[in-house]
Image (cartoon, rainbow, N blue to C red; front, side, top):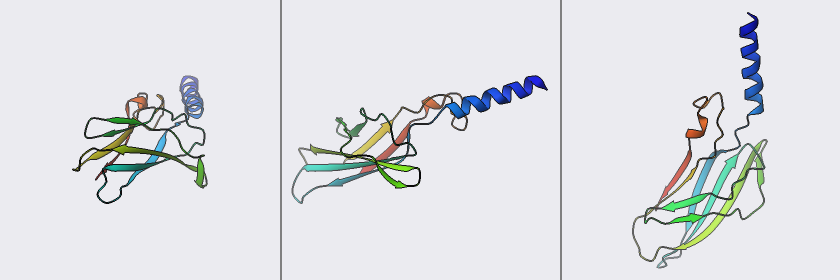
Length: 131
């Protein structure tokens, strides 16, 4: 009995010390003037944490290009314990056509009990836009 209690206590303290500092939602938007191949992307990412290290996010396009996103505004609290991060970037597609844009964040830490425990770091966050 003591051994089971020790294991439960260890798991509880481990799960309390591991915080999933990652995104829980996202939205990719684009703006383009008629007849122009220049596209302005707005990427909104949502998290329960206000201090994420998110400098190396990449927005990848179906033409093979990946664009490094930089956070453009302060983190905005949109609800109790929900924060919104905004990123902007412009890109010239060079020709008209059908494109996809997607973002994958692979910084989910290992050890989260309710996400593929103990290998939660293998589960990426993914969002996509087709235009």
